[in-house]
Image 1 (cartoon, one colour):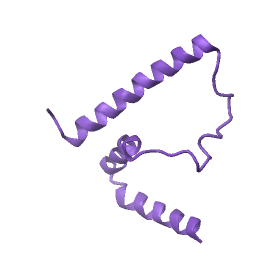
Image 2: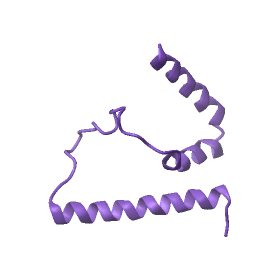
Image 3: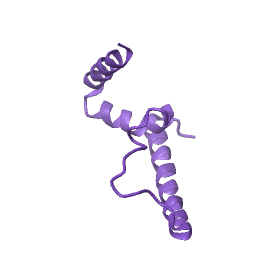
Image 4: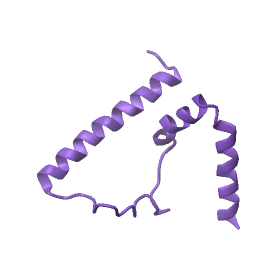
Length: 83
């Protein structure tokens, strides 16, 4: 089995694509869905995200040479939140 980071990122992206398909099907069948432009989930600190969910984004940041810069920005934000 290929345990490379590239393969793991592809697996996570495939999982997300499959979830998107299932969510669309669920919304069609139930007529339930998000309100357009809401964004409350994105700005609610109580919603957790696992490290696995961030893997594709983190790998993208790394490949584009922005890892150190992004880490510094995140550390600054964390310091503001702690104060």
